[in-house]
Structure formats: structure tokens, C-alpha cells
Length: 168
Image (cartoon, rainbow, N blue to C red):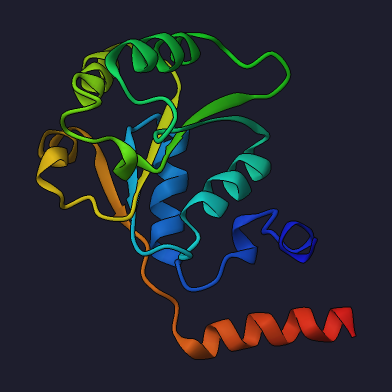
């Protein structure tokens, strides 16, 4: 598949997010809890994987839509945050689709995540489309926020043109 073939392998291959990428790299290297936010398709998840590839870090991705109540967060994120990577230099815990955690059905999930923060020994990155939802007000105070902007049409055109030329 072309999406896999041309997925970015390094931060140099991600276009239009220079400041966000610099800050992300700094935060991951210094284990600063981070939330990446912005519209769908801006490169948030791809950036985490590209950075991990550059740094030779393992990525443990959890989808918040699947693991979102208190017990699941404590079990999965808690355990992963305490273990070192076996084969890589470091580890990034990536909690994607944070917006999937609801306020009622998943009661306790966000509080469990906040409770785990002081114990986390690895880089923790959360991804959200709309971090300004009221349910995330406490998270916004505890995590460093990095915005990913929507790329302009010219940038998208140039990337697609480059792929088209390579694929003939």
C-alpha cells in the first residue's frame, strides 16, 4: 500500500510542522508528558512514529477508544510506563484517539491517567483532535500541548506530486 510505503520514516519527511516537531522531539527526549492536537490528517501519529524511528525508540500504541476506563488505563498504561524497552533505546507510550474517552461511560479513565503521571518513567504522548473539550481541562494543565496545523493545499499538492512521480 502506498500509505505504508510513503509513511514518514524520519522527521525530515514530515512537512509543515517544523515548530511542533522540534517541541515534540525535545519533550520525548526529556520525558515531558505531551498532548498533540489538531485536525485529522495533520501528521500527529505519523510524527510520533517517525521520531521513534529516528531515536530508535519503541512505540507502544494504545487506542483510547479501546482502552479507556479506569481499570484498563491503570493496567495497560501503568504497566507499560514502568517497563523499559527490551530491544530499543527507549519507549514512547502513545495514547491515540483521546477524544474517544467519554465522560460517563468511561468514568475514571482520565483521572486514572492523571494519577499515573508522577509514576511514568517513559515518554507519554496523547493525541486528540479537540483538546479544548471541557472533559480535558485537567489534562491540559498537566501536559505540554503541541498544536499541529492543517497543511496548506500547495504543500499537500507537492507531496502528492512527488509520490506520483516516483510511482510513475
